[in-house]
Image 1 (cartoon, helix red, strand yellow):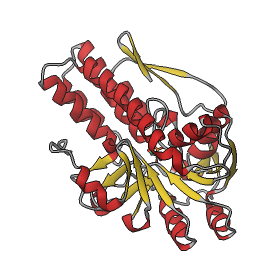
Image 2 (cartoon, rainbow, N blue to C red; image 1 turned 90 degrees about the vertical axis):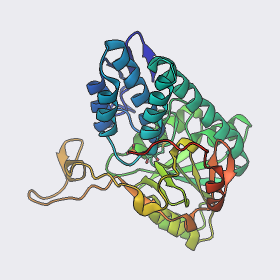
Image 3 (tube, rainbow, N blue to C red; image 1 turned 90 degrees about the horizontal axis):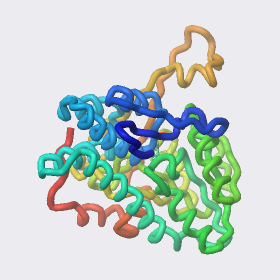
Image 4 (cartoon, rainbow, N blue to C red; image 1 turned 120 degrees about the horizontal axis):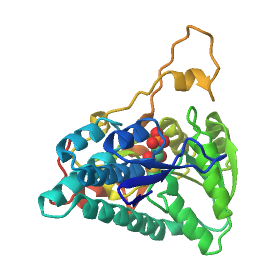
Length: 326
Ligand code: MRU
């Protein structure tokens, strides 16, 4: 994702892995719709898209307050969206241009991911069998990724390991996007259906569960793609470490616990159809929860840009100035 002239350009994640399409978004409404329709997705990537959205609003002479309000209404769960908007507005109030603030935010996102890679690399040893869920790769950030960062760093260190990718119904971020990114990096992997996690863990075929996060509450409760929570419970039941890789921009110190995290519900058509083809009887309804919350007690640690933190240590890293919440 990058700014080119007065447009935001980004990969259309709906077309992958079969088509590499670049979208060119020219106003805030187009950026908002790209976020809502999942053309751009993944908490840090959504945050950066919103920051760039404010930069193009500024270039067009649009009202930044109204642009920010529109972007805040796109997807409720991921915290980076709100952190990025607050950051740009704060910098603008301090005399920067929105463009400068957005470019800085995007640059720092890449640095945060690289730091996650440096800290998390030691968890991926020769022969480690990792289970991941959804996509927390370069596509879900500005570049590098969160889960993908330690995997990439371990690969660069010459280690061979294996990744089980759960397909992530209904949007298939695992099989379409994570498998594609792992393939690009030459990392050995296999796609499994979401319901296979129990069998794999029971058979002792997973050494480490590693997922991303959309919003982490101050007590460590973590919202991530629906299907994360059962994997955490299963990991604990089988004595397998469960780590969350996320930048500190995903931590919402204003949310004391998981109950304060809003859970997005998406259109039921995403569950009732696959690639436009119905997969349920006409007249059946669906509930399409996009995220679930894993209580902190199931989480071994957070691989952050500040290092590997235990859930109880998160609060100690609260910045003196917490960004204004919605
Ligand atoms: O609905 P999505 O695809 O935006 O959900 C994304 C996830 O749940 C990711 O795991 C999370 O945002 C971490 S991305 C670095």
